[in-house]
Image: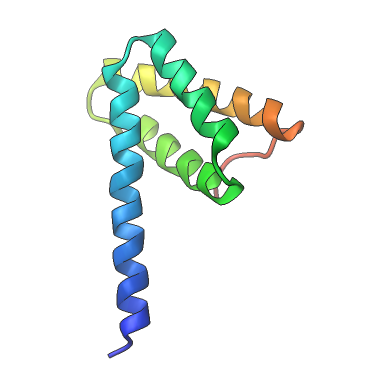
Length: 96
């Protein structure tokens, strides 16, 4: 049994739960508050965290079962990409 692989997988699961919690907190805010929080998240996080959140937010926006929530998530994703563009001064593309 490779303990390091188990610990890595467990860490990835916990990080995914954390990303979902952040996104759900945005959904609990009004649009202005959520956009401010998105801006703070993107501008203050390490690049690896921005990349991971990009994938998590895109996945949630594409797969959420509630159409109204999905629409808000797409709006949040667009704002996320705009803030990312401003931070890195280039369009970094979409997650693979």
